[in-house]
Image (cartoon, rainbow, N blue to C red; front, side, top):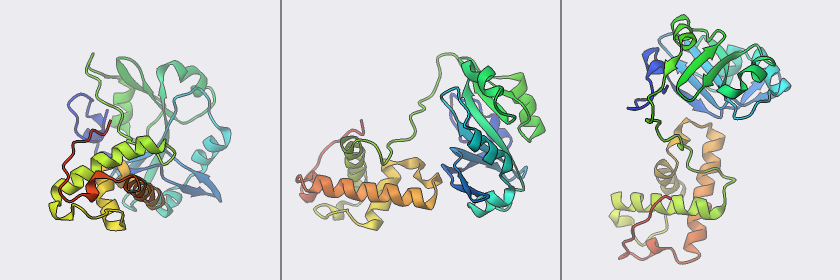
Length: 241
């Protein structure tokens, strides 16, 4: 149930105008930090879904309280557009955890089952809420790739290096005149990051800066070992995996 076109997932969110606004947003709530995993916003409805994704069965009481206290002004202060006037905190969870998580929060639950996505509670948008309550079917055997977060700054250096080396190749294919030069500069790192970590454009400025620094460190690390791109005549095929 995506906010961007995909042939396999239902497009219910698109139907109601929801698009990715930001990922891993840092929101100041009465002096304490809340960090929803993703914020989906619909300009058409002036509404945002502030989503915390949970793989486990526990609810952090402090975090849950901050989501309850979060105001639209808090979200504006964190960079959510002022065209958004209302918001709804949501937990995105696995079906096996509905009873436990539902017993520890009053917030809406977006529940992912094996064949359906369904909702519990009020999502702040009547049409969207109604469709989730009825359940949205997933195509059998057509689950798309959900590995959309290529790397974290806490990943092993070797894993980051493989992804960055692949992105450097794509970068140099578009800029053959740059071959033989070090791309360990801020402008080059930004361009390489667009290939290496596409979701970075939805992240906060601070997180984007962290990822850019990780890319520059990776480039320098590889150049210290004689990276192939330092040879202006080099041509090499690299897989991101």
